[in-house]
Amino acid sequence: MTRRGLLALGAGLVSARALPTPKIKEVSVIATEPAGVRLIVVKITTDQDGLYGYGCATFTQRADAVVVAVNNYLRPFLLGKPTDNIDDIWHACYASSYWRNGPVLNNAISGVDMALWDIKGRQAGMPVYELLGGKCREGADCYTHASGREISETLDQARQILARGFRNVRVQVDTPGMEGYGSAHGGTPITGLRPGPVFESQPYMKRALKLLDAARTQLGDDVGLLHDVHERVTPIEAVRFAKEMERFNLFFLEDVLSPEDIDYFRMIRQQCATQLAMGELFNSPHEWTPLISGRLIDFMRMHVSQTGGLTPARKIAAMGEQFGVRTAWHGPGDVSPIGHACNATLDVVCYNFGIQEYSAFNDRTREVFSGCPRCENGYLYPNDAPGWGIEVDERAAAKYPFGYGESGDRKRLNGGWGEIRRRDGQIIEQ
Ligand code: MG
Image (cartoon, rainbow, N blue to C red):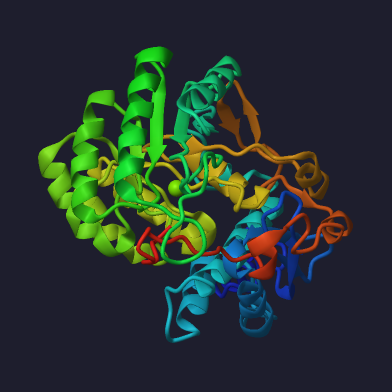
């Protein structure tokens, strides 16, 4: 390289491959609902022919707000900026609202961040996992969900999942008459002092303990069993519940506390060795620091499309490695295939990988997104094409607008969630 070339490289005017640094020419949003859940994808187009990238900014319950955050605030902020310095752009976006670390704004940044990583991979002709140092495992061991109105129904589903090659399964069962989490509803709905669904923690906990007892007895000692509390019990109930679950040797107990009550993790830790997963509701990357540095949880359960994207996720994962805390990135239906590709990428590059939640993609989702991560025998594999290796068919996406396939409260609330109350009418966190 000539001296002039070296000077230009130092000034950030040309990329390391001696091509001009791409500049952001357009930032747009693809809003689609191919599987009954509102997905948001940010597309960044550069001034170089055919060079663009996709990122996941999904926040299904407040999707329209994220669309505005991208279109009205990040788009004008980003137009014309070079794409090369992803960490710099992340911090610039983060600081540009002054108030920061909320849902909506961090989702919007997640979409931008992942799109820039996609662009960098496409520039390099490499999958993103190569840019991060390459794989330290071949595939990501996954779990998926079994649920039922009755314990027997949940266990039948779990057996089917194990027969498909999975080694780990999350089990949930309905509490008759109540609005359970992650299970079909059965029995005559309990009537409370306010109209609408009812949930009480005591019957739920008794039922869940019976489920795990049956699951461990009937599915055997070698199955990785997981259970999600979804923050629906009081803090001291959570302490007792975690202790009672210890005998079932869970792979993890998820969200036994709400983010508002995380100081109770110390109490749980002092009393049992149940493996704990936490954090899908965290907004700020900084919420992880006390739980990881205090060794108060075993698995970080980050929603990468919520916390700010790949850039903060890999930093928090690296911090976790120093403290023996493993990853379990949030992987439900309300993450787009781009977000799942980001999860799968982190899975194969993080030494402190723990497990990956897997949700199958339906045919409509595959019509919109080609190149989705592949799951075989319970292992998830990232695509090995450049970037995330995913293409989005925007015409197909437009066939499934927000609201597609929704009904009832979901539709009335514009994708938001309804209310669940205790029998006496008090609202619960859900
Ligand atoms: Mg959960």
